[in-house]
Image (cartoon, rainbow, N blue to C red; front, side, top):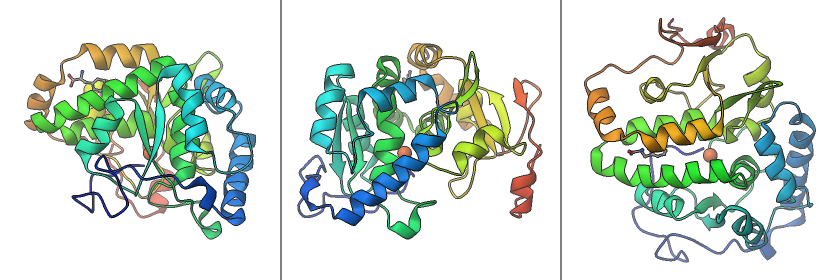
Length: 293
Ligand code: PHE
Ligand code: FE
């Protein structure tokens, strides 16, 4: 997951001017590769019937089931042939303009470290499992690949227009925590969900969260939480529609309008929402959250 706070303002020692670092694949220990394999086996078993078709296809065509932490060079070679994307390593969070520049140029920035064996279930900062298992399969899908590259360009524009807060929410509720309605039922495609054992069940099975039809402006006005399961998921109908709507809309006037409008509380359900499930919010309440809507 990405947050909007970045610690450093210039590349740390050992990083290139564009903030990339060597993945140093040869330096992973056997224990680190084993952590990947454990996480992989657990998710790969859970995701058929839960993850979107595009995601499962990506997992397959990129051969991510090969044991051990993937080698970014090998992965990039496969990805490049499919959609023109590459995976590059960076030392943790990078400045927004660096993040967007890589993305607009079809370079997906990934952390190269892996979580410790006692952190299998939850970790606040994105590691190689979240970044590669969570994000990269979707980049093998031509439409989603175009969406993310367009998002990178949109990010560069949002920085100039003061729209980052709004555009960041679009990322959160699609790239990180998106659901899609497929003919067989709701499926997950957001990387924050597919890389989480618990949330890949909660997002589809729990009565607690709201599941609402995706509406671009509604999403951009909605707050989000980074520290627990989402209380709110937005459901797209297709990646084509997501791409078309976001690319064809000029966000400049939207950013201007939204500045004058109140944000929407996390769990609120509004009269205009297309409600797929109106959640009980029981989970959030049990965690001591105030629940609106
Ligand atoms: N159309 C958006 C803009 O005018 C850019 C964008 C494209 C944003 C795709 C997100 C996804 O800024
Ligand atoms: Fe992420």
